[in-house]
Image (tube, rainbow, N blue to C red; front, side, top):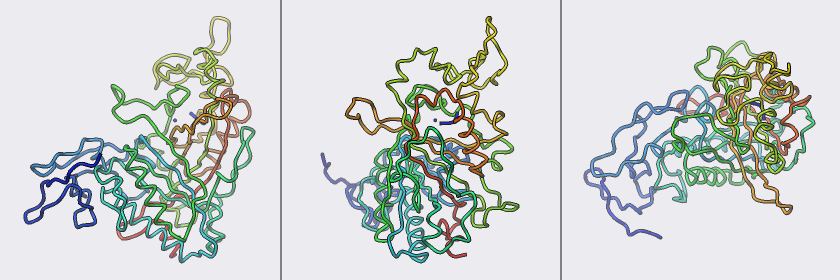
Length: 432
C-alpha cells in the first residue's frame, strides 16, 4: 500500500410537441439525460484533475440536478477515463475471462459493445438495449468506465506478438497471500461514480453486455468519502484513519505524463499502447484489530506521518518535504528508518512513481469477529517494473506497515489509450 415506494406518474417539462411521463422509460424516446434536464454533451467539461468548469442551466420548469449528479467525465479522449479524475465515492472492479472458443473476433465485438455502453452511461443516457432503469433518476455522477487487458488475453486471442513485455507477471512478495481465483483475468473493467446506484447500474450493464463472450472471473466493491463530505477538499483517508495519497503525482507536474502514460513514440511498448497506462490492482486486507491496539503515536511511527493532518513527523504541514535526517534530543531519527512514508518515497526508489487511485472495501465480519476490510489498491504507471515493483520490493525488505496488512489478490493490466470519436477501446490492438 505505497504512500489511498413508487410515485405517481407526472408530466415534466419537455420540448414543444412532446409530453413526457416522469416514469416513462428512456427507451420510449427520451434519454435519461434529456428527461432530467442535464447539461448535455457540450454543457459540462472536465479538466485533467476532474473539476467541473461549466454547467448549462436546466430547461425552464425542470428541477436541475445537484452539482454532484451533474458532473460528467468524457469517454473519448487521449487517455481513458478513470485515471486522472478525482477519487469517486463508489467503485466496482471486475475481471472477465473470455468464454471457451471465443476468439479475437468475439473479443473485438465485446469491446465495441462495452465502449458504446460506456459512452452512453457516462453521458447520463440509458443503455442502448434493455436498460434496467436503476439509474434513470440520476445524472452522470462523474461515472467513469475503464477497460484493460490481462496477460492471458493475448494467448486466448492469438495476439501473443502484441503482448507488452511490461505485462510479464508480477514477482512474488513476502506479504502476498494471494487467492488465484480472485487475481488476474483476461479483461479488466474499473467502474467509479459518485452515486452508488449509478455505479451499480454501470456494472450490471457491462456484465449483461458480456453475453456469451466472457464470464466474470472476480468482482470487488469499494468506496471512498463522498465529495463534499468535508469542510474543504482534502486528501482521502483510508480505513486505518491515515491520509492516503499525500505525495501522489499531479497532472500539473512537468514529468507527470512521462511517469504515468506510455508515450506515443520512442517507447518499447507496442504501438497500440500509445497514451495508455498499466494498472496494478491489489486487494490489501488491513488487520484493523491489531492496528487499532496501537497508540496514535505508535501508528504515526509506523507510517511516518501525523494522523491528524498528514504532516511528516519531521514537522510542517502535509505538503512540507520530509526531513529524513532530522533527529530528536536523544539522537534518534524523528522519522523511523522503517516508516512506510520514508521507504515509499520516490527519491528513495530511483524516482519510481505511480498514481494511486484506490477504493476502501468492507466485505463483512469473519467468523472470528475480525473485519474483512482494507484497500482495493489501484495504481497507474507507464512501466510497472519501474513503478509498483520497484517500490514494493523496497517495502518488502522492512516496511513497518507490512505487519498490519496482507495482500490477498493481485492483477496487472494493460490499459490502452483513449478511444477517438467513432472508435472503441482497444481497436488498434484488435484490428491492427
